[in-house]
Every structure is written in structure tokens, then in C-alpha cells.
Length: 353
Image: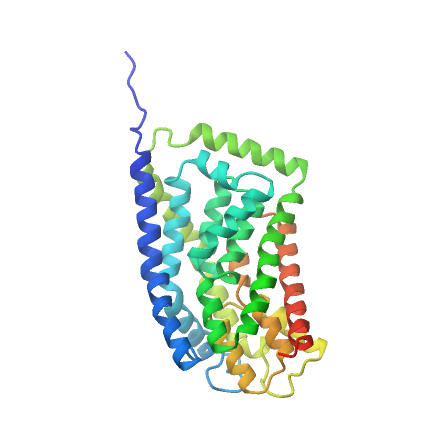
């Protein structure tokens, strides 16, 4: 006599649970606060002070206090979104059918890139809070292009940030960000898929087959969800905190004294493009940072570089995803973001911003 150890099919319940957490979480953490913040931006032409240096002309000198103060301010701004990102990133792996993820995000063509980019628009997370979801998608065999488009699109195509930017910096800055952002998100996603080698494609197909064959075998989905959530939290959060502390202490090295001496020279544009790519900020944090720097007399070229490099990636988010992508791809993404920052700075100068 054989015993049936197959778990009941809770597909509908799993879908409902995931959708409820996603919608309720995003409404509480993103949609509702940003809706009200848009009115503040429209009336005050500001959304707060620069998290980088406040009203000062330069960040504090490297020290433990500088590290701790930035980590506390940054953590206060993003902790709810990080919790939501971890819940969704683990939920993607435990609650959603792998066949659905493969169908929508697993193809190597441009369609999966479009799906990833479009899904990022309502998410509106910062680069680090989106990283657990990206890791979850990759663990379920989403294509690298779809995952890259989702990762970058969260910040670069964030509709709330684009609205804040228009009211605070001017709609010309919003237009520049949107045009270059669309090219960055979907272009990088397309080339990420196109750059897959035959060996990588074969390995991805093998992983895919294993996922489909073993999905839900003899294990409660909700217990598995909590197990994955715990593993992700233990693996991602400590390194994340350490890197944020280091960057908080190093602010003065990445961003020197801000003033009219920071001109539109190509060297400064390159410098700020690299600094913006490395540094980490909360969602829409680039808007008050650029506003404060422009008020202190910085050239529009370096400001334009920060427009495209501060939000999409950072050292912590790259570290959180180094297991999810090939090192070559992460290097290419980093270099391309810097290149877009340089292009954005040159266009800001050339268009007379």
C-alpha cells in the first residue's frame, strides 16, 4: 500500500497571497505616499533636503559618525520598501508558478525585456529594494534581459520621480531622463539577452527543467516561502548594511566641495558619472540632491551625469546581485550606466539646461 505525499494544489491561494502583498505593500509604501508628495512638489517646488549633505556645501569628512548618520537617514527612508522587496523576492520563488515566470520573463527575445520593464513601472523601488525581487526572478529562470530591465526600470522609469523632477528641477530634466531612461532600460535588457552564450543558454535551460520538475514537491509552499525569506535576509542584509555604512563615510571622497568650481568640463562630468554610479540613495533622492547642487552653483553637466547614474545601480545593489548575473554582465551594466551619465551631462550642456 502506497501513501500519497503530494501536497494539495494551492495555486489560487498562492496567487492571491502574492498579489495581496504586492498591491497592499506598494500602496502603503509607494503609491499613497508618492501621490501626496506630488502635491508637495507642485506647491513647494521641493520634496525635501539633500540626503547627501543637507544644506551644506560639502558632505561631512569620513568618520564613523558620518557613516552612521547617513545609514540611519537612508535606512529610515527605505526600510519598509526593503521589507517589501524581500517578501516579494522570496514570494516569487515560492508562490508563483515557474511556468508562468518562464512564459512571461524567461524568453531570450525582446518580449521578456518589455515585460520586465513594464512590470518595474508600478513597483517604483530604489535599486537596492528592487534587488531581492530581481534575485527571485533570476532564481526562477527569468532571462537576464528581463531581470535587468526590471532592476533599472524601477528607478529610471519611476513615474513618481519623473513628476517630482518636473515640478522641482523643470520638465526639461524630466524629458531628458525619460528619453535616455527608455533607451537604457530596454537597450541594456535587449543586449543582456543577446549576449548570452550557447553554454549559458544551455545551463539556463537545464536549470529551468529542474525548477519545473521539482516545483512544490513534497513541501508546503508557505513554509518554503518563509525558508527562502530567511535565507535571503541573512545573505543580503548584513553585506548591504556594511556597504551603506562605508559609502556614508566616503561621501566626502565621492562628492567633494560643491560650488561654481564644479564646471561643465568633461573631467567633472566623468567624475560625477562614476561617483553617482557607485553611491546609494533612496527612491527619488537624486531630485533634492541635484536641486541643492544646482543652487550651490554646480554646472549642469555634472548634474546631468547624476541624473542618470545616482538612481539605477550602486555598489550595494551590485553586491546583492553578484550571484544572480555573470560578472561580465554586471561590469557591462556598470560601464553602460556611466556612459549614459556622461551622455546625459553633455546633452544638458548642449541643450542649454
